[in-house]
Image (cartoon, rainbow, N blue to C red):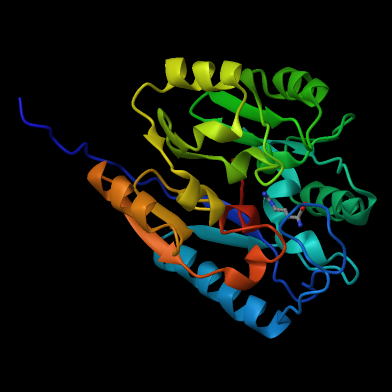
Length: 274
Ligand code: ARG
């Protein structure tokens, strides 16, 4: 039988973003950050604004949290919390440089009428390491989020939480090595995971889209999918072609300035699931 390209369905989403008003690289907590290399905050803001506008054009809703002076990484809202069924698990950052972001997020969520807002007891970097795929949460550990945090997420959300172990410091958050494309489909870079975690991913998603090293190194996996449209860094050319073959609509975005902090489109986007 000839191969038929699967039909993909987009679902309108609600996101939380933070304008990179105070973005810069003044410390290094991942291998991509180099405080000696100049950053252009105005350019970061322009790139971010295009991403923000794009979500609106695609029919999504974006809420904003105010940036805080002295918290240059706050643009990466994906790390601030995990939000499922109106329940919020607020991040508890590994590095003191980002600790202030937890309070900012907690205050924002408490004012937002969420069902429950809980501060994580263990190191937990939000959606950077907790990716929601249908009624399952894929949870990364190895560099940032403590595996004990996965049990806490299971307890709060009442969902299956599967631990995936990361091994390459360049892919320090799960969302740098894996993206959820649809409730039952993901793409990932196998070499970023331990052999056991690779085997688990193969058994869960036998038809997953696999990224090669080149696409992974330009953060091609730091992508945001609404079920059909997939926003990903424009440098990830081969991966975009592969997504199109699978029935997705790749939308290349330029976030080169925000990449200097070790983040891409997904890092700048926290999904709110009321
Ligand atoms: N400089 C930030 C850090 O190292 C980048 C965070 C990127 N966010 C993400 N979801 N991967 O913590």
